[in-house]
Amino acid sequence: MEIKTLYISAILLLLIAASCGGESVTKTTGELPAEQIAVFTSTDRQLQKSYEWARKTALSYSHDGSDPVGYWYEAALPNREAFCMRDVSHQSVGAQILGLVPHNKNMFTLFAENISEQKDWCSYWEINRYNKPAPADYLNDKEFWYNLNANFDVMQACLKMYRWTGDNEYVSGEKFIDFFEKNVTEYIDRWNLSPDSIMSRQPYMNVPDGFDSSNNFHTCRGLPSYVENIPGVAVGIDLLASLYAGFNSYSVMAYINENPDASGSAEKKAMEYRDIIENEWWDAENQSYHTMMLPGGEFRRGEGLPYILWFDVSDNADRIKIVLDDITKGKWNVENISHFPELFYRYGYSEEAYRYLVSLPSMSRSEYPEVSYGFIEGCVCGAMGFRPDYADKSVATVSRLMGSETDSQIRNIKVFDGYMTLRHVGNDYSELTNDTSEDLVWKASFFGDYSIVEAGGISYPVVKTTDLKGNIFSTAEISLASKTALVARAVADSSRD
Image (cartoon, rainbow, N blue to C red):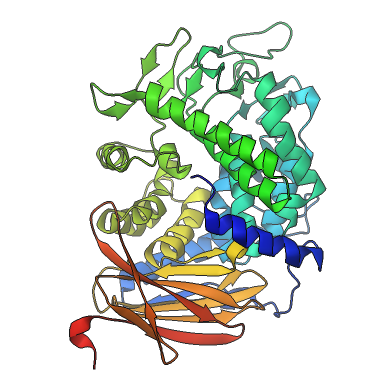
């Protein structure tokens, strides 16, 4: 989405603070043992049991830093002992919640520092525990597997990590800055991805000498989509969506780095990619998006729709509803389904989100690492509605749990330089503990039409919004000091004293 006014003002405050301190948030809170981090309990026993499976499974894929690659977690096919750019980008929020902070930082740093001109500004798609490009995806700098979306997926993930951690290196560190700037310049030019030429690009570019159409390391060196089962695709809608997200993320990062000209230019470029999707890829006759384009401009339908939501590219409510409906009717691999809970919760489809969430542990290929990490994000960010943002020193919460009497708590979520604990009881009671060094604004939302929110003996006014399904939410902004806890209760007119 476009840069919001509140974001600009918040970032200016952040810049002032940053000038007086170091690059990263100062760690003032002691680290907890792993068994105490991100512990979920609920009167919804099915949800709690599923969460316990996801937490145990996800942590079983984490490694303690004793390997040559350093801290890492598995984010690829099981038993490959590796992590790929796409999967790390998609697992990173779940990993952050579980306290795998050094793991995320190390892996994203490795992706950023391994970009090179010899690889046409690609990085290594997949890195193994020995700190080598995984042999299953790499032979040499001219022959390897690479999905072009990856660079921009990583950019979006880095901005997410900044919002969760306050670690300024994710947006301002030298290696990251070099990676971002190469992505929005040389990488765009080398792979013909600019808005004014992407619709005429060819499927195979920068090919090695002796190009062999039967060699995957030739034909898949620069795939223009995450959808890999259709040869000869020139552009996938997911690539366009990732470009939107990458430039939108770069726009925010440029503000943080006091470069308003670059920020404005990147925001404009992001909107150009959105316009291509909304104006050229929308099939008005069939009321749906095309998902892939062959050379010559022939459109096809296939996979790729979920990435419109993952990269948050459309602001057209009617079209988002169509995408959500299309997804519920389709058959998807478990990698896609892993993120359906968070996506469906985000847009107000709580019943559908819950069904996806509790079914993940028993799905075919549930051992794929992305499943357990996606579950963690879907439960904490989706069902519990927990979303921190270091840029404006805030945390937003909303219960999307099923049942008016459900009592659920997630203890010790790893966020900023400490932990937070969130409890929801029914639709009108939330409790947030801020065990970080930051004084925060708590954006406490409640499902329903309420008049005020009471917290700490103060009555706060509410702002009312609706989701795609027309559900009303009442939100109050509450001051929450460091090392304190507050209970917030939503109050309707008829229930006030």
